[in-house]
Image 1 (tube, rainbow, N blue to C red):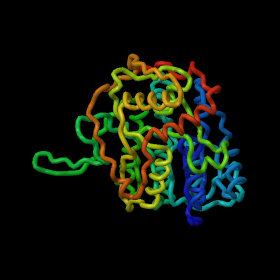
Image 2: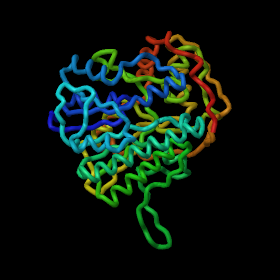
Image 3: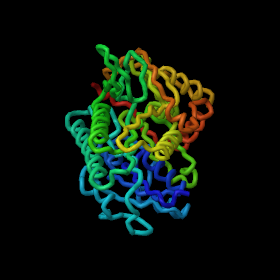
Image 4: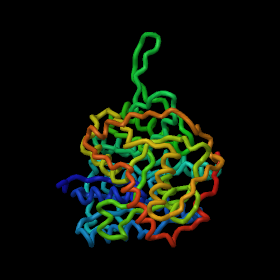
Length: 398
């Protein structure tokens, strides 16, 4: 049991945040969950569909307590406000829901998901670009200063993105690259070349954290995560109301989740351009494992650990073919349709990332098998009548 360990989860209402809160609570951690409902509000504002309704963060914490007897303290607030961030470290925090309102204590670990997570959203127009930059960078900066000033031994786990690297014509190492130039050697952050404004803010996050590590001897783990897929986790099976939110739209839905939804309603799978875009993918259950293993293996003070958080790589064409094959096995007529690419990106490229670090820590990967994809099909099928074809593709261009 980890009853004395306190973990603070920023962005705890999100696709990854809520499963992470339940996962650590089940393991016996004291969990504080924070969110301002940015994702929900953005979905409402942009009129994009969620597959099924999801109770509020407070309601989910109450359901979790009723079902398990375990408390997840909830704070609803905007982490762009520096004093809110600092309140988690100096005892001033005010919980919107808790069984026991007493201060849990300074968190040993902070998991930072609290960012606008969508490339298309970040490039809808200059206003949404500004929202993305302000939200993502201010929250990260607020966290760095709060930890520096109030709890410099706290371990920060930030979930970054493989998109920071872009698609270089060399192998992608885990965060760092040894360089020899004019007879001298040094180690640098692997070169970044983002393909969207959202991904650019994640590069800036890494730079902010690397600065904080070098200047203030903080301890930080940056997880370069690929696109995530999946719905159910062991914890969500306790009660269907505990499922994480699920987007299938172009703005917030990840590609595998989108393709499965499209297949079920007979919407042609939207392959952008030539479909050779290759990325690293990860099951939502493996995200939970990776964050947990990172928490158990913190860096030394003054160290930035970087892991590439993926389990296998696929091209868009390969994913579309997998979805088509599984869909047809389940009785669906699945069409794959290549459309003009709304994004400025390489459609055929070299892609060879290293991703051994988390496996060496003991993560047991879930792979994208036909069987695992069938399970996702069956969950989405339950909510088939909720799917809105009009929100699947809008063609956000950049």
